[in-house]
Image (cartoon, rainbow, N blue to C red; front, side):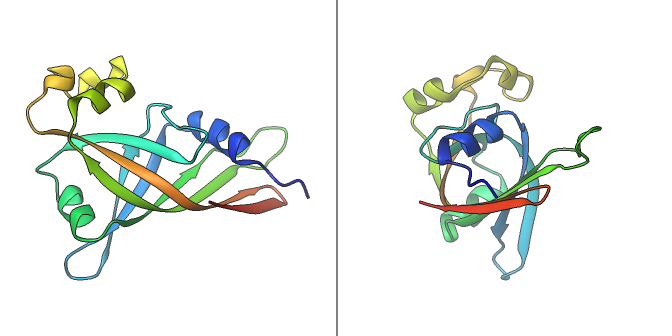
Length: 144
């Protein structure tokens, strides 16, 4: 079994666009929704997601910053193995436009017509505490 490094996992994550982001609802239940990371995953374990400040997810994160992210790839034709990554982390709601600009991707304008000037735009920064992965018979964990 080969242990993946944080840099290798960040590279893997940058090639998987959609994550399922899970938060805790006010009633204690778990809420999940698909989010795009736009390939913006840094080698230190942080990933970034844009949304609107009126979303229920923002209120849930402001109440409880503990979140999880789940990523997967389809099994390969030759290997039969997919890649599955689970992240336990802390989310922060970022409201500074200068930070938006650092993490903005042109494709986001499909959802946020006025770019970083879109009214109500916020960015979620998820800092990983623990990353677990499974790739075929290979599995491991990186604790940050």
